[in-house]
Image 1 (cartoon, helix red, strand yellow):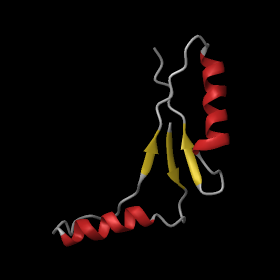
Image 2 (image 1 turned 60 degrees about the vertical axis):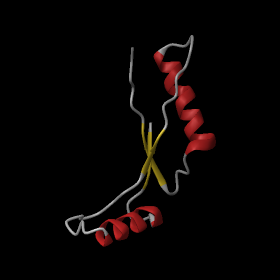
Image 3 (image 1 turned 120 degrees about the vertical axis):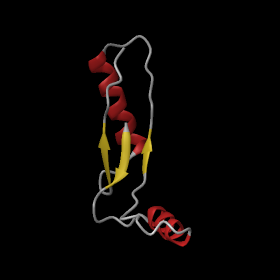
Image 4 (image 1 turned 90 degrees about the vertical axis):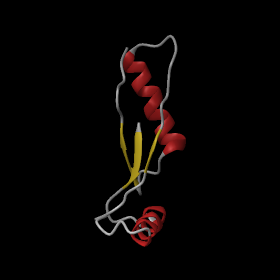
Length: 77
């Protein structure tokens, strides 16, 4: 899953990276955004259960719904 800040939320890390890249001469940089990718692997559960468990992890620990948007990606197998 990908967890990133919602539009309009200050991304201080991205701002600092953008400034540093410009100082390094990369003036063509239009913008920088950060995101975290969490790869959760479940054992012995079907796909709907895995989705429910991933959503529980998001709700309880990995994201704050006020400031984050989450994209769940099924890697399937």
